[in-house]
Each structure stands twice: as C-alpha cells, then as structure tokens.
Image 1 (cartoon, rainbow, N blue to C red):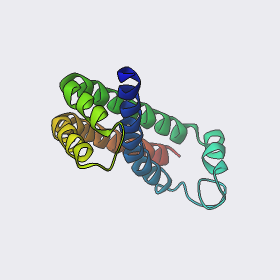
Image 2: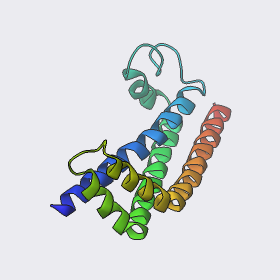
Image 3: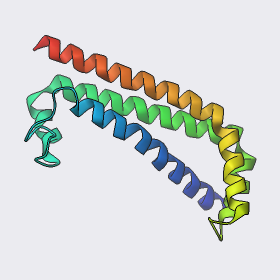
Image 4: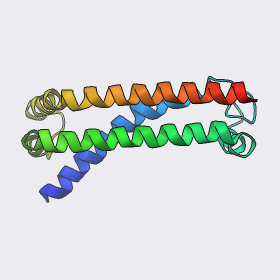
Length: 144
C-alpha cells in the first residue's frame, strides 16, 4: 500500500512539474509566429496538428523541447526519490486521511524543503529547454 501511495505522490508531483513546463513552452511556441486561425490560434486544438504537417522544422523543435522537459522531470523525480525518501514516506502517511491537516501541511513543507535542490536543478534544466526551443524556432523562421 505504501508503494501505491508513493506512486500517487510521484504522479501528483509529476503533474505539477509537467504543468509548470508545458504552459510556458506552449506559450512560447505559439507566441513565435504560430498564432492565427488554424495554426494554434483561436480555431481550437487542431492548429498544432495542422502546423505539424506544414512546418516540420517547428514541429521538430516542439518535440525536442517536450523530450527535454520530460527528461528534466524524470531526473527531478529520481533525485527527490533518492534524496527525500523519508520525507516522501512521512508526507504520504501524514496526508493519507486528511490533506488539509496541519500534520500533512508540515510534512509537505518538509518534503518541499528537502526537494529544493532537485527542483532548482530541474528549473535550470527547463530554462535550458525553453531557451533551446526559442533558438530552434528562430532558426526555423530564418530558414524560411
């Protein structure tokens, strides 16, 4: 049962980490000339799909950025699991019945403190992914 809870915490942390990566990368990607109806603009979710067909370079940039951020997340999770195993277990136990309890909040705070170095390293890696995406998209635009 503890492994399942550990997995659930890891999934939750992964979700938070993924959102913190995907939103800025998506904003950056569509902010670089990808807007407009039918190309990621207000026309809906098909814009990115259609752009994949029309501009392989930009699509490849996004794929590389996604792989980069996924690797940063995976590395951060491994780091946290290794460095903060007891804090993860404590947080799982403290939060098993009531996520809003003070005991749970304290345990999560301790986990965050323990994980700070891992998360800082992840943030640096995600920044590098973001910068590489911008450079890649600029190169695509220059090649057209």
